[in-house]
Image 1 (tube, helix red, strand yellow):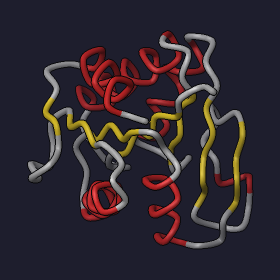
Image 2 (cartoon, one colour; image 1 turned 30 degrees about the vertical axis):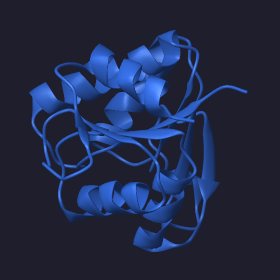
Image 3 (cartoon, one colour; image 1 turned 135 degrees about the horizontal axis):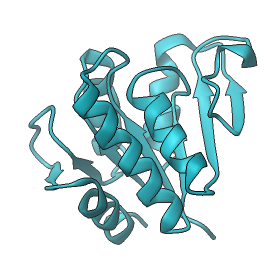
Image 4 (cartoon, rainbow, N blue to C red; image 1 turned 180 degrees about the vertical axis):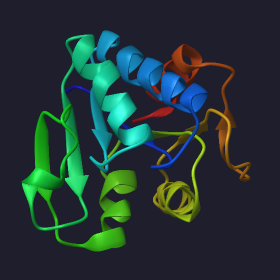
Length: 149
């Protein structure tokens, strides 16, 4: 079975953070894993872009009821109509989570992942006990794949 790596982060972040997210998405694809996001903009869109451009597969749990809410790089969209509660699906359905800079939604995904025993790797952003720190996108994905079961 292919591993699923969730990438979480803010919808309104700086260009350097978007570049990191794109590299994470690319690394997920190159590792043969499946990328999982919340399917919207910012970090989610950048990761999906990197994944698609590297020939990978990405899926998204959308907060609303409409597939058209997905960013243009999403391959498979699940319109959950759960709002922010979809964060529990994103964090809980992955083998591991890679977290970039973001706000309270990102923090909730980190906490939900940890609570479910899903390994979380951080690439900047929130500093939370139990989260593994990575120095770059490739290391983040490598650690996520190593830790995710």
